Image (cartoon, rainbow, N blue to C red; front, top):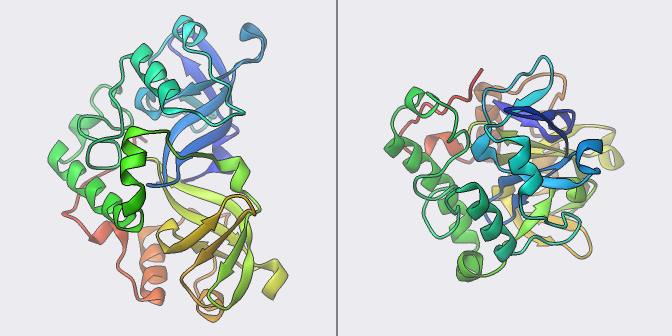
Length: 282
């Protein structure tokens, strides 16, 4: 299931013994485009301190009440390492955080989350509902291989030095350039709930042809200028203009994804590895 980050920011994080707070932002790894942490504002009970919550601890989502239960306690949140979420999160901060909760590192291995680690890891029965750890691993490796090829020079830094964590809120409104000119700006971000991989950027093209919204995969990004807040994709304006329109009021399905990839003459991410039944909890 693809989930909008705009929708996710309406959710409350609920610990096993009480509410933690509201999701205010999401931090993703800009080398592999995977969500690593939710930024949660705790409210009055912890003096509005912002804390990080990992997808590892997520339990079965409650979509009707907009709640994401997590298998941690409010005391753990209270005593967790303090991190200034308004500043870049260092690798040392991550090591302190993951060590505090007893989580394995997500870097230094293969796949989106490295060996032995994935979202919902603490959700009883979730892993058993999948088609085996090996198939999950292969599907993740197929996704990450694309980004490894794009970021060969950065891989050692990514493994051993500070991470490239970016705020989803911060990249909204970034301008998007095609090979032959501007096409619009980022309006929304869609993530795949089972792996928390960023699958698509929703591009608003209203400044070019009157409000049409299209989907662009991070795989198609050629370059990003984080300072000047724009990215360049390896597609032409006309090809983007002729692509299937995205309707934010409808849940995108695999058929629609396949039509889009076929339009661009590309192979879908789901077809690059042995099939894995990666179905998020309903």
